[in-house]
Image (tube, rainbow, N blue to C red):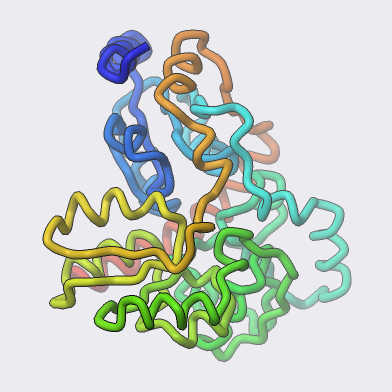
Length: 312
């Protein structure tokens, strides 16, 4: 089926299902283009609570659709590709987390949004890469178990006086970027600024102008007087960067910056999911309520930050 036919079919199915389509910044360009909203985990978490729709079609990976289901129990949440998961999420299970809680009984658990609903339910508060340092600093406890991304935890540790106990998980897309690759990219593009994701290893972050979430990278580039940038996160973000900044140039550190699970979603899988009413993501109510507390605490911190910024 041709692209235009797929787009027409998606538009028709949206009306039938009274659906909204949201897509993560790492999705394929054509998927981002048909979405009603494109953003990072925090932006999409917020957006899903504010939309007027009966169905949420989530173009991302499973934990993101679970978060939408946690916050929208009265809506149908469909994952655009049923097999789209996240290897980082799979690096920790509930028994391991409970074991860490027993080992550090006085510590609070701050859980990266890249985690399952079950892990969120066992945590005190969630965070994203955009608000992680603010969330950590909002916790009253001085000892914090941070799960599951160790590199993000190392980065947060530079921005807090809290004692972080780091679980050894990682995002393979960011973790495999090496300082040698960064130095080569800088040699090839000496005029470019380097912007990386805080899931990168600290040796890579040390070479960058800034470590930023995807939404922060987008805002930084738009506001910058620089004309060229080396980007150290999943390559899907280049689509929005180029759309929003047609006069600027963008380069990747490496051609390995691809999340295979993010790329599983296609226009065809979206049509199939909507047409067959499949890949519906649900969270057991007992788990949902506990997980929602952790997500709500995160959103409260984010809304407070936003209110403070608007008041300035």
